[in-house]
Length: 337
Image 1 (spheres, rainbow, N blue to C red):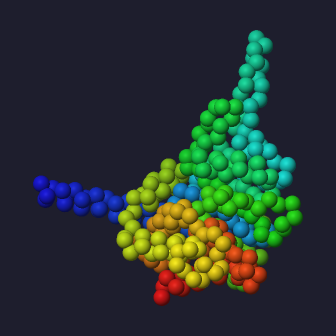
Image 2: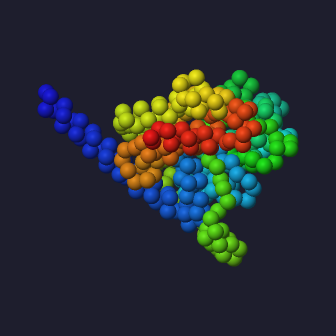
Image 3: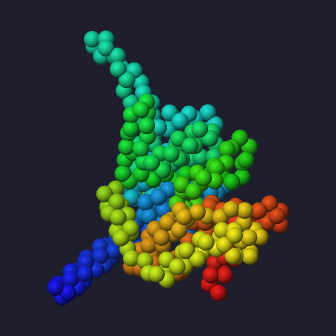
């Protein structure tokens, strides 16, 4: 009996390794296709893709003109997802995103309501400048991100699967913006900071995007395959050492847990969702980097995108010119020691 059991386990493991290797090659194709259109910005592309592969949403933060929108449309095309884009403005209403009921009249004069779906009914939704919308509209989107359905006039409508929101935020202009509340930022699996391109990449952007022909990306996988990869990522085993490293890092970022530097600089720290995000993204990152199991290096690499939007500094730390990034870098350094 024991003999049969171990053979079954081996077969399971072999099947798991085979499907993980297939996912590896699919993800490598996705990376390659994206790089034809988006030059440089490797960590931005990686973290945004990790959020999608891990089944979540990402918040892209950066000044205008850094190709955040182009990245999202490129990902939609390469992953074969049906995508929509909404430009957020202060006068945008929840119904402009979710959809609304309209009255129809048939030949006999009978009237009835019909639901017209809004742009949120997409597999990939780009929410441009999400901090420009009023809190009411923001919360309508954030609720659908959490619940994967919308309710209009008491009727429930499920969103498509997969469903991912990639939202952008401009950190500069604070005039006429409504910063996302902390509890709502937590709905984003990762925050992706988009910086200016490197010199060589910017030269390539200049040369290749101002001519007549521009590279257009092709679909490498489709929605069904993406769902399979997401399911596989949730099944990947994570060693105890990596789980311990995740717990140690997340807990060290919370005040009152015995970390002197955190107690001094952090007003509030990350909740359990941070650890969940880290577990999923560490597995996705392993596959993205061509490995079959996550390591402690994955945890350290993901510390910033996972924790940055889930903690806030004390007034004293901000007055000293510290940033959340500095604090996270310090925690990673401590955990490596």
